[in-house]
Image (tube, rainbow, N blue to C red; front, side, top):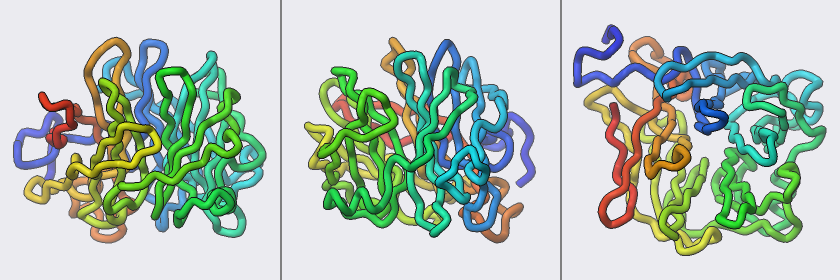
Length: 309
């Protein structure tokens, strides 16, 4: 399955958006450019420690802006490694970077760092923002406190969504580095939920998407549901992003969705098993690559299943 760019064979997948092994991409816009914040992949057991950022003027060619945080250094005093699944938000001229890492006891938590620009330098807070202990104290059912995403309501209030084995949402304080007391809620109705929940609001309806199965499974995919409220309950609709085995596209999931400003247009960034598949006979779940495709809505106002490039 050797390919050149562009892919000459319609039965093969298009080349990934980023060169190399990356996963869990968060796609954002700012200051006339687009930015991708992924997990750095290719490490057994998802054991990478560094986060990078890439920028683009057009969602096509991406520039590597370098490492913005290393969770195995004193820059993140509470963490010991396993840098996963970041999310980024902008408020008041600053950029906030939400990321997963393991504590020395092996427990995964969500930390936060901030910077004056989307490419850093990012300074991490000395303690994690969300932990399993915090979730348990709030009566939230989940297996791991991982996979953050950020949502801004119409009134400007910001919310953190996260979870593995159970989905949760909490309101961020105005400082964007702490959670509002008493705001943590369980999200119900996310059928087959595994991880990586996110939400967007369009024409008054909340559109939830989340990943199902295991990231090491060829059938890893994204389900879709809607709700009348940010706190649910979610009404499951159907899978919106799935594998295409006939084109060697497998393990599609852990996404983010971007609506560029002033346009009713949407893009979805996600990962799949790295291609050609034959290059990675073992450990496909930590040999992943990032893709960006269009996401469209039908006449009924619901998301349409993603068509792979």
